[in-house]
Amino acid sequence: MYAMILNQLNYTVDGRNILTQVTQQIKIGERIGIIGANGSGKTTLAHLIIGDLIQDNGTISVNGRVAYVPQLSIDISNQSGGEKMMQRINESLNDQPDILILDEPTANLDMTHQKWLIKRLSHFYGTLIIISHDSHLVNQVVTKIWSIQGTRVAAYSGNYDDYMMQINMANDTQAQLYRVAVNKKNQLGRAIEKVQTREKQVTKRPKNISPSDARLISGKGKALKSQKKLGQNVKSMARRFSELEKVDKPFATKPLKLQAVVDQAKKSRAILKVIAETVQIGDRVLLKDVNFKLDSGQRLAILGDNGSGKTSLIKHVLSNYQKPVGYFTQDLSGLNENSTVLENVLLKSSQTSQLARDFLGAFGIKRDKVFQKVRTLSGGEKVKVLLLQVLFTDTQLLILDEPTNYLDLPALDALNNFLTHYTGAVLMVAHYQDFVDAVATQKMIIKAQQLLPI
Ligand SMILES: Nc1ncnc2c1ncn2[C@@H]1O[C@H](COP(=O)(O)OP(=O)(O)OP(=O)(O)O)[C@@H](O)[C@H]1O
Ligand SMILES: [Mg+2]
Image (cartoon, rainbow, N blue to C red; front, side, top):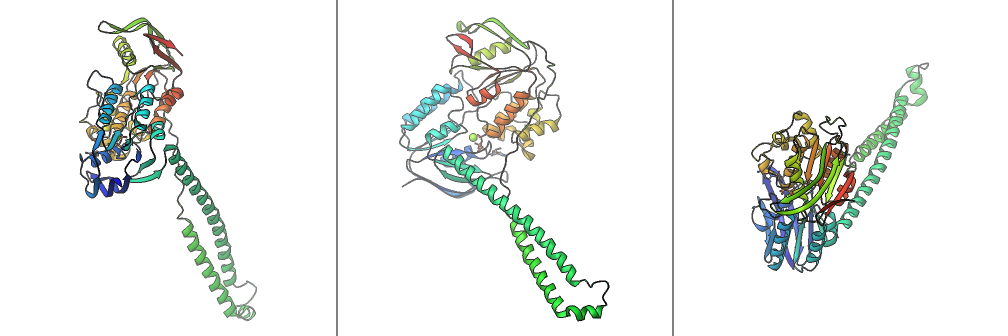
């Protein structure tokens, strides 16, 4: 019995293909993980399934009641992003839908709540569709992967690790096929050259023999025959040669290297100093006796549970810092939705648009996309644009509050690369452990109203 059947779905926006020929079925009780780069069409697919968007052609049949928890983008209330997501997931689960679709559910959740979510989902007996960049979640919860590659959806059985194994195996096989093809091609190339040289020798009359003697010695018929045969050999070799060219080179991702945009820190000491400060909201004290100092090239990560006061600490620092700061926050309020991608990146920067385009490219936003209005971008694409606007700000201090949410892997690599080469100072909050470990030069944790070094 099927929970859902997608048949030959096509969806375009502004003449651009977003999804093409999507044909997939979901059995009742199956758990699907939808993965793919930012802007590849994951949220669009969810909106097509729930009927918020209508496909250009193809059909979708859904068997049962669907609950959809959308991707959070703009954080308007006082609730933290994590708390809001938890509330929405809880409401949907309590509703006991037949099919539950979650779009980036862990983007704002701390470790404790991520564990809570995995447990709750393992007790959900309906059909589950999770859209996520969080490989840990996808690994724990799903039994099948839909990977959006280009505009197509490819299905792989198993969880995220199984998917990676299948992808790596396919890449290895492709690499092997390619190596064999290249060898054969070289061999054939050499053979063709050899045959062509022989062909010339057969038709050429030795210099010291007259034409009539040559005819007598070799016999014209014989020479013509071998010339023809050699010609056929060359032809068939050339055909095989051209067939060999058809093996595709295996796909390889290029390492992304970014240098810090603003190199004006000049190793100045103590870009940020916080001494014995108290952080409070109204009368409520969140943190007491906060002390830390950041020199150029230092990157401090602040850890702590949802609601422990990380964002409040950042806001406190911001309101007391006198110089310009590159500040990234989850609410995306720094974006001008009606301006283009490129205009947004350069909003607070003296850098050139060529450099901005290079950076955008490294983050996966390429070609005409840089002229697209920000309001039409996917959640992750918006995050990338704001992040680049912040990184491009003329400043010595970057303050990044959850910069990794929604980002795909190439963008995470690019950000990591940028930050580790950055000559100013960085203060950041991020839930994504691997990223923090790779980027931070020091870590502190909030526990019982105190900020403690780890
Ligand atoms: N009006 C529009 N004009 C041009 N492109 C559009 C428009 N609306 C949506 N798009 C494009 O559709 C694509 C798919 O967006 P979608 O939100 O489905 O991506 P996604 O896979 O969910 O990405 P993310 O991981 O960032 O959430 C994006 O590249 C987006 O820029
Ligand atoms: Mg999305």
